[in-house]
Image (cartoon, rainbow, N blue to C red; front, side, top):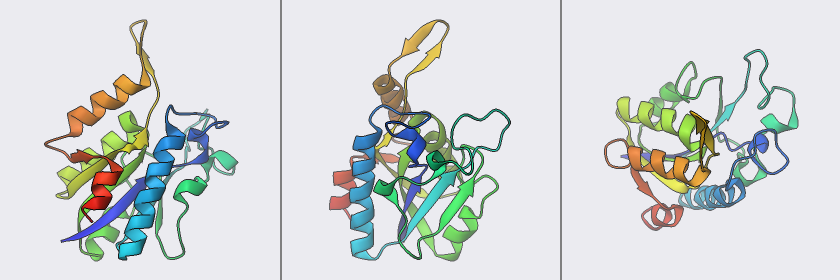
Amino acid sequence: MTKALLIVDIQNDYFPGGAMELEGSVEAGGKAKALLAAFRAKGLPVVHVQHLSVRPGATFFVPGTPGVEIHPAAAPSEGEPVFQKNFPNSFRQTGLLDHLKQNGVTELVIAGMMTHMCIDATTRAAFDLGFKCRLAHDACATRALSFGGETVPARYVHNSFISALHGLFANCQSADEVISRL
């Protein structure tokens, strides 16, 4: 079984001063950086995903802006592939699945942003495609959401999505737990 680290959308727009700042992005970026260091030290594969918003009226991840760039905390090293996507699911209309299959990857450790959108969609898709998934919950971040005149704080959004993924779709662990089991 070959495991790989999948880093999803850790981009400048999600950090302080960005167009779509997420709660806890700095802390999550730090945990992702620790995962990257551990995977690299063990010689395990690392794959990056970068979101580009191509829909009319997009306000963040706009191509050609600094916000679309991968944040320094998760910067790819030479030789690490970067797949660009235009949808929440990192597998949709990208070469990610083919790359993972060609490299014999059967297990993914997933980290990135936004928990309730791209992390959720990518984790569920990975499970459906037959991958064993571990989700580093503290290497992910999200934002508050509103519906029906009620605002749900980011920590509740994050915990709700992590708890929904944990068990069937992924084994959700802290980055430190993931690193200790490499």
